[in-house]
Image 1 (cartoon, rainbow over the protein chains, first blue to last red):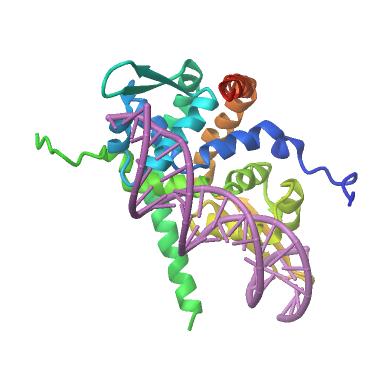
Image 2 (image 1 turned 60 degrees about the vertical axis):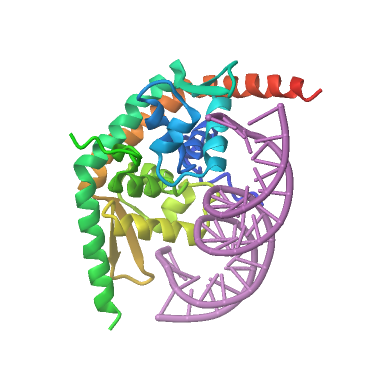
Length: 129
Length: 129
DNA sequence: CGGCATCCTCGCAGATACTG
DNA sequence: CAGTATCTGCGAGGATGCCG
């Protein structure tokens, strides 16, 4: 073990917290749920309808994780049948500008990504011969 | 207008390109590789050293994907032993401000996330009784 | 309605070994 | 040095069924 001393693995990259936060947004559904809730407090079912293809399990799981990490507040209204509403916390609001910015970047630049991909695949296909 | 209906999975969320881009950054290693290359053009091994815990396989795979999507440029210098250098493309440079901003957010707010998590776990543990 | 429990599977990712 | 190739596991995530 220990061949570490000489080469620093760049602490700023391997840094603890950052990796953890990356894991949070890496969950594939988290960012989509955040976007949904960005439109305001809403019910469980409403979130599900807004995110095409998400299963109940993943929606619940994602919401739990977001709640645990302090991004989402869950409110149960004592009614029958039960009404459960979710909303972003102030902490999440501080993150949302970055999330929104990311989506704006996508809208502006995604065509270039597709283009690059086609070019890459094209070249790669030729090498196949 | 076409106030369409039953299926309204919120086009802005289910929208095509955005999901694809989310998948890109969801790969867990991609963002870390982008950060590494943000320090400038560097060799394969250098990137690996900067990202603690990444395997050769995943590093190669991540770099290939980034190259395919137009975020990274790969240059092979005709030397023995082979020298391969990677660098961010102009397209990636337009994305980096968002990536950096995200890391800054983490530095500023991660303690709150940890705090929320502890609070959540604490309450949850009590309910266990 | 808004979950949780269970089962199952498919593919990501790690470990290891080999190569130009 | 900068990769490929192969095997394997394990866990994310889908499907289904039940409950307050």
